Amino acid sequence: MLHIGCHLSTTGGFLKMGETALSIGADTFAFFTRNPRGMKAKPVDPDDAAALRALLQERGFAALVAHAPYTMNACAAKPELRELAHTMMADDLKRMEYLPGNFYNFHPGSHVKQGAEQGISYIAELLNDVLTPEQHTTVLLETMAGKGTEVGRSFEEIRAIIDAVSLKDKLGVCLDTCHVWDAGYDIAGDLDGVLDTFDRVIGLDHLRAVHLNDSMNPCGAHKDRHAKIGEGCIGFAALQRVTCHPALCGLPFILETPNDLDGYADEIRRLRGK
Ligand code: FE
Ligand code: FE
Ligand code: ZN
Image (cartoon, rainbow, N blue to C red; front, side, top):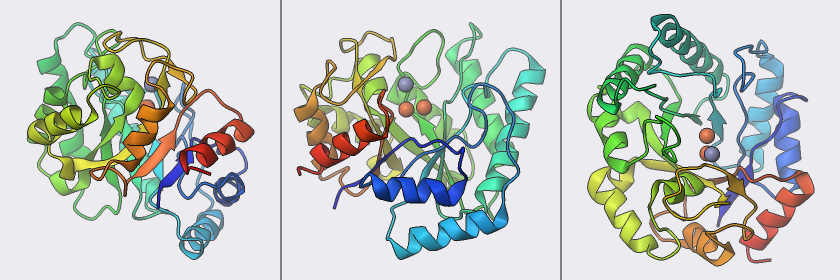
């Protein structure tokens, strides 16, 4: 069965997100661990978290894919910004322990002209500081479109980060279909070839989740503008093939398309082939 959901607002709390997910036919979802464009985090309500845990189990949800704030830059040039990334991720992982067994996805960062190699080493340094053998969350590196000085624009860059991290069993990859397409991987014309490359460079065993988005721009554009499924350059058929591919079909798929809840419900229904 296809495990699919979308990004949901945390406004009503944890249980509310679970109920909203069910109401749109989802069996997984994503949410921001704190203000995506700031750093503020609401304190976790343990009872609300327990209520969501019970619902997830009772209704057989797949793993959730929480998303770190966009403001977190593990490879910023300013030491105080790298320190802030450190503080935010460590705190987010503590909060994620209220929902054990799920994923925490983050953008590796932007090296802001320090070079990818320096960026990669800062990102690995942060992960080596923050990951602990005791944590019940797998941290995911998101594949990026290569906008500006983003790190993670190629499978090789993702691999280089993984290589430099010691606790590899706490680390995985989230493949964003819009981002890899914009980075120049032709998942519409040659999905098998792209996944073979992923397997050769990173290893498909590291792939733990997929962000399912169409792209407003052609392959290789390095733009990162998400489109609704079937309304962009990748297209519905190609994205449905992604969800059915034997190497991917068991993973949680998260829609981050420009939609309201009705739009998400419709995308989920169509991708489920109903
Ligand atoms: Fe993202
Ligand atoms: Fe994404
Ligand atoms: Zn994006």
